[in-house]
Length: 140
View 1 (cartoon, rainbow, N blue to C red):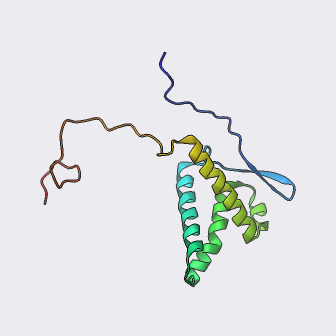
View 2 (cartoon, one colour; view 1 turned 120 degrees about the horizontal axis):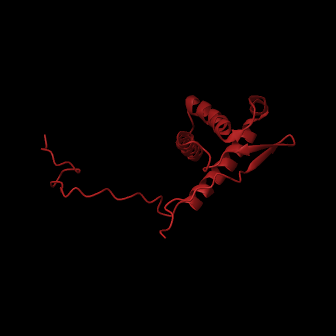
View 3 (spheres, helix red, strand yellow; view 1 turned 30 degrees about the vertical axis):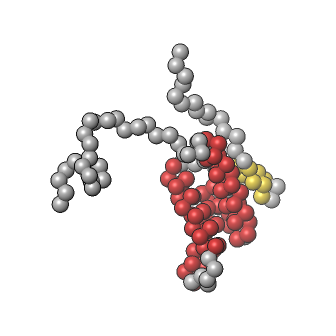
């Protein structure tokens, strides 16, 4: 019997954050919709980029850096809007950091070090001409 090509588990053990004595779930890589996953990674990169800057941030960048943890927290923390509204900037940053750490660990667990393996494209038998990025059409 052939080995399964995919093994999925619908029961996911999700981390929680306790706020004022109440537990709220963090969305993890396994349950986060792909678009949210992409946006989360982009926002995390932007926060890191702004935090590493050695020169002064512009007013727009300061406002962006203040807004990003709130946006990240809203994506990853399953809590009512009233709970999100009570959080201060440091708490939002802590939630964002906890979520991203969990997210990155999940990514590392779910894929090999080189990233997910993609199936090879079937060969058509056609080769590309020198200087062409894969096209067999005439160059302009």
